[in-house]
View: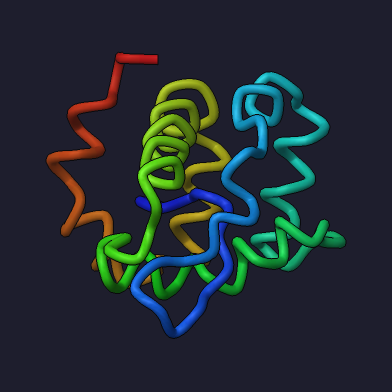
Length: 120
């Protein structure tokens, strides 16, 4: 979940910035909105267009350390990770089970994850 920024994959050097102005704070502050995005990512619910884009892009972003992410996407991803790790570890665990069942990314990003613990 290192790059939980709303993105859409393109063959160019970065993901589209179409979703860069999504209000990440609003999503994180609303249990309803956050649950909607998480349910989309987990395949448990319907996806908004930006949620669908995130779901399609997340595996690539994780695999390639978000190298195609724009600055806003990286910033948004950091904010989301900080929130989930510190305030919604239940959701973090569900997402990790789906997108990192072998603990590859958790191990790769351990230092970053540890750095945000307690810094909500």
